[in-house]
Length: 224
Image 1 (spheres, rainbow, N blue to C red):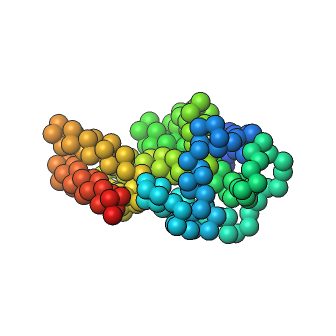
Image 2: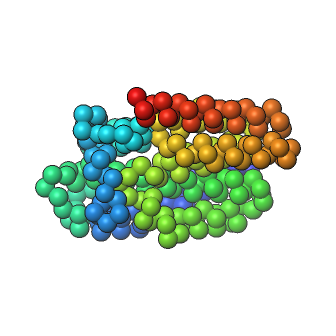
């Protein structure tokens, strides 16, 4: 019996969810709750900062990856509901497809964490599928914004925290230029765990301090 999650589980999660990507690309539109897409569009299309204002120009990792994906030429040419003569459908596709990939990977991280806790593969996959098929996933993750990568980054940070891994530090650095709210979650968790001694004191203090420094770095970045 295999002792860790691998490509088979990832493939199953894709099977659970690929129809969500098709629906989001075919029928989704930034004009219904995702208007921030227009603020990120210049980054997605040409990595041009001239027309991007704060805080959108401080969320850099996922826009760059969408830009890179767009540069590969990967594209599904079909008629979709969203039509705007000023917006490239190829860019829209890249953003939605990238966020779908992040959503699947987030579900995969969830399954790994649940499996480590309960050592039950079916139970872990059930949690992953529940994340994929939840109401919020389709509307808040599989869209052309930056939230899906932030959720993935947050899941990886939580996984590193539960494993007491110092790999959490470079992940927190990434959060500075992706989503600042992550620092609040992690700092509070580390603080309470350290006070209640549920986590080794050295690790809890290290994560707490790193989170505070990350939050300060973000504030400086945004103000300047």
